[in-house]
Image (cartoon, rainbow, N blue to C red; front, side, top):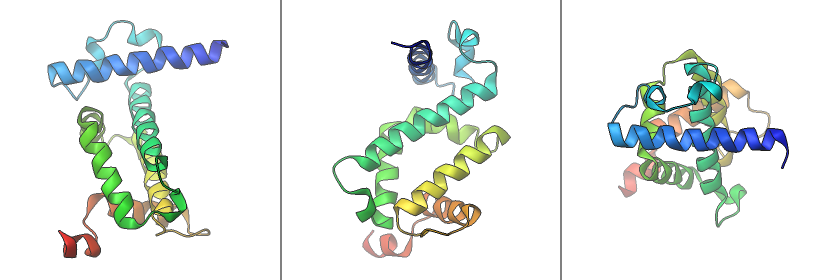
Length: 151
């Protein structure tokens, strides 16, 4: 196994410990401060937050790709899957939600939202990234009319 892969595996192990600590303590502001050896894997709080977001995206994308052709997903499917993943990983989501205004998360969150809009078929090829991000943010933050009718 290469050095880079080993480093990634170690960071993922530390990330699992951060989430476990947050679950046990209820601290979603900075649970990494209570985890030993974090500073040897992450330079600062911002780097930890970026890794928390990467972990969220890994889990979300894995769920979006499971069992169905991604290109056939509807907006309702994507929103429902997003909600399922958030429910299955409440601590991870809580850490991100607590820090949603932190500047280090702006760009990766915008990219996540744009990805969701594209998968949902709401942002076709050629849609400006900023527009796709706005559409995706709306998708995950508000109920869309089709869901209201069936709720």
